[in-house]
Structures are given as structure tokens and as C-alpha cells.
Length: 334
Image 1: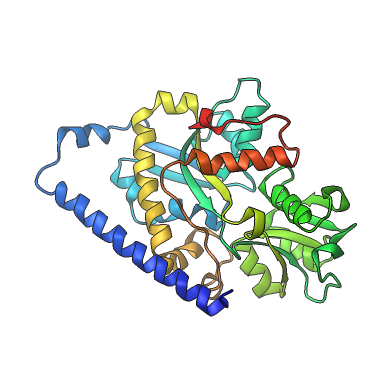
Image 2: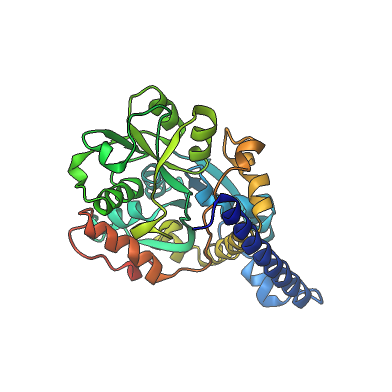
């Protein structure tokens, strides 16, 4: 297994190559449209709803959105985006269903549960994928000086996830199974990401499932230590989040939805292609991220388009661990 310096070198190489591809693609697109704007292009930009409220959990899962906003990709499509920060995708869903939010970015688990349990009342459209976990981007942390040394030492202990019944708890369950433990052998409690490190330090919890940048903040500010990497083993390269609208919204505003997808696709390409831009941007959108911490963050990968096969994996793991009683076909959301 390569050490951290080798992993970082490989990551930089991959992102540098992707950046070159992104730049060439962008240049080619610009060249094709440089002579005169076509009628079809002008029509595409006639969005039905130019002002959008987008709710997100402030985490590196949403780097594609942050970069699209920073670099004017939404503005180029005739969209004005207001990013509203929420503590969980469940909170975002509530505002979306009440009509105060147009698009949300959150963990697939919440949306699948909402649709599966709504008896047809809730129907989602996955506009674009958001993030796929990488090794070191989500981990179980313990406080400095903790007597816990192995996953088996978690028996009878409290583990925090930012919200119960979501991707954090799902990955905790998978970790336990891979270590021959039952989910019931621990107690999963809710603790929002921004306060999780302090709760760990205060011994209110014994361990926590941390996403970036809260993971790097906890390690830097509190000296928290990694116990288990949920981006390995059975949940390596796990689909974490996506950009979601209701089916009714997408049907009502088709040009707006298409414009959002075009802009977020450019953001995703840049997020996956430029580590330097990720590091320079993350602190502008997420509180508490200093340049030092930005340099330590392990970013996810940021796919473009929507892969039913990849997202189906989430629903299947949900059924495996009892969050769903029956298999859910994610094709109804795409």
C-alpha cells in the first residue's frame, strides 16, 4: 500500500491530467461558439426560473457546486444561485418539499428513504451526482488519549453520526459487520458535524463518523485520531451525495434544470481536475477551514452525469442493513 506522500502524489497527478482535459474541453467549446451564438444556445439560456435557492450541508462533497458558483458557471447559464447551508440533508428535504428550496445537495440515503416511505407522494429527480468517497475522506475518529484502539473496543460505546438513519450510520454499520460485530453492539447518536469534534473532546461521545473538512479540523484543532477508514473495504468508492430536485420541479422548469446540470457538470470537472482550486476555494464556502487545513483535506471524487449502477449500490446497502425492507430501484429517480 502506498504511503501518504505517494497517495498525494498520485492524486495530484490524476487531478493535473484531468485539469488539462477540462481546459482543452472548455477551450474547444469556446472555439465552437466563438463565431456567433446560435438560436438553440440562446433558447437554452432562457431559463424559466433564474433565481434558485440551493440548500447544502457545508462539506467537501459539494465542491462541484462551490466551484461552479465561484467561477461563474451558473451565471453563464443565466442562473443566480443562493447557497443556503443546512445541518443535514433531512433539513434540506423539508425546505424543498415546502417550496422554499429549489435544489438540494445531500446524501442519497435521505432521498431514497423519503421516496420509498411516501407511498408515491414524493418523487425525486437526481439532476447530477455529487461525490464519491475516497480513502481518508470519511473516517471514524477517536479523541487523543482514548483507550479505544480497535473497532472491537467500540462495543458498548457511543458513536456519533451527523444524523441517524443516513449515510454515516450506514457506513458505521458496514464497518461493524466487516469486523464481525453487530450494529446493536454500539449506540449511534446524532451530533452535527460542526460540533462533533468538541463533543468527542468533551467525552460526550466515544467516537464519531467525520466527513471532510470536519475530519481535518478535528485532527488539527483537537488532535483527534483515526480509528477506521470507511472509504475502504466493502464501502470503498461509495456514492455519498447528489444534486436533487423534485420530479414536479424538474418538469415545471426543464430549461432551468438543464442549465443547472450544464453548470454543475463544469464544476464537477473542475473539482475533480484541480486540487489547487479545491484547496483555494474550500475555505471560501466552509467556515473554519484555514489554508493550513485546506492543504490537509482529502477530497472526494466528483463524477459527471448520473450512473444508475453506482447509485443503486446505495439502495442495496440500505436494504442490507435494514434501512429499507424491500429493494428500491433508483431508476425511478433518474
